[in-house]
Length: 299
Image (tube, rainbow, N blue to C red; front, top):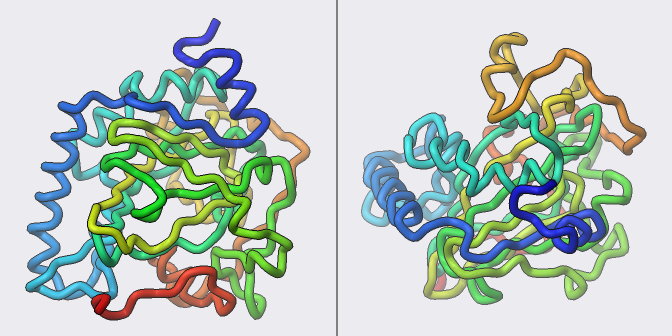
């Protein structure tokens, strides 16, 4: 028995590594999330550099505050924490990877109209390899998302393949050279949908997103979740202080101290670059970029 997903939806996710569910989040919750973003934007206006709560765009100024990420929003926003533990988010995840779920991390990535930063092509599992790959990310689509405003893109089926080389000059840069690995971006699929939809993508799927050069915002709230019996491999970027701390991240079901081991490809994301406070800084070391970086306002 499943809670919300049909057999066809589960089969699609199993085969392609992604799923989009339209109109999953009520408009009242979306309105509250947007209000929370406005609250963070007011804080960003007082900042000159990124901190442990807010990651600023390279083009940020006090007169034009520009955020590209709110870090761990579930720890600073009741609205986003409550959504994380709701059936709006967890019911389809339970249908895909089981009843016992643990939080990996949360983030709210923002591509504001006209200048939103790109994310280079990568696999989440390259950052945090685990003992099995029942690991996924749920993205809450806060603004209508289409080709024009920098949607999340994926290469279907790559969740069944290898973990690609995310290193350059023997340092982890958290991104891959598409051409060197034989990929053509024209074959990627956009995970578009109206505000209130969610997308789900497998931790091993290759994905990225371009700059937002449109006149519309594109904001995605990510909840990264794993089966409770998926434990991080030494050297992964997953961190926890103790078993008590790790178990405090349970979203539903029961924890375990018996990892489930499966035969999956793994690469260790070490050594780390000197700048590793966010994926944007880590990926700044990539030379063969798919997307340009925006250092100044578009003309």
